[in-house]
Image (cartoon, rainbow, N blue to C red):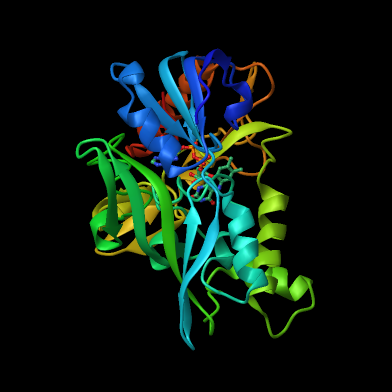
Length: 338
Ligand SMILES: Cc1cc2nc3c(=O)[nH]c(=O)nc-3n(C[C@H](O)[C@H](O)[C@H](O)COP(=O)(O)OP(=O)(O)OC[C@H]3O[C@@H](n4cnc5c(N)ncnc54)[C@H](O)[C@@H]3O)c2cc1C
């Protein structure tokens, strides 16, 4: 049973804290609710958009349609053997709560993704990643309402077409698949992912020599809390831009301009640190009115309180222009612009 609301403020529904209104707004708590929304003649001609916690969205205007706020809950163990578990989580479950649930049960694989804001259902959309782990490493399958077929479908991991911060849900079939639950394959004998030096440093500072998945999670929480702004205090959507991927020649050309360039091999190509490029272009800690580039992490744009989505977008365009001018590199937004 769904309850329709009209002319609703979205300020509490996006981590940037942007004031924007939705013409129509509905919360869904089950697959039946979801089906009702997407098959109802009442909403047939309305533009629709599903949101979780709104931690990867920049509203630059009011939404002239129906916002579907996803609150589908439930965590269910669906299979288990001596080595691993298959576990299904409702798409409205909070991501970090799900991570902690798995750690409590000793299931490893997502501890490096601790404290990422948002919901389970949005995690496959941009194939969330942090500290050497991506969602695709542990995802088994996704269940979604298919707007083309008008029925629920199951997608295997391969069918999700995951890439760096991308998937079929963000690109090829954007807006056409509404995720209702996700199945994860987690390990009872986890191999810890400690390739990021910062994790080892944090463990050392915590006095831990032989780490468990909970220790890794605590180390990640401590690193993230020290360098990322809490959206409750300072509106933001995490990394605003993706790390650009360029050819070896391009990377070497930039290195000849500045030997300190931070880059990582990425297949045949190279991934450049967008944070480094933005900082080197002079933006770190820079503020214009209500918008700024976060002082501890230049990849994060922040709302100092009363910024509009349009102001944040204009600020991001200026950053893109100056990085392009200085290094000839195009920065692509990671955040969904609306
Ligand atoms: C402080 C901070 C740190 C962050 N750190 C990271 C990080 O380390 N790594 C990382 O990858 N991301 C990070 N993010 C970005 C964000 O947390 C993730 O992208 C998260 O998965 C978004 O979840 P959400 O529920 O808030 O999605 P929303 O912002 O509500 O939605 C994001 C997109 O997904 C779509 N969507 C949402 N739910 C569904 C669904 N059920 N079915 C289909 N489409 C859906 C929406 O339509 C929208 O296009 C960070 C954000 C913040 C604020």
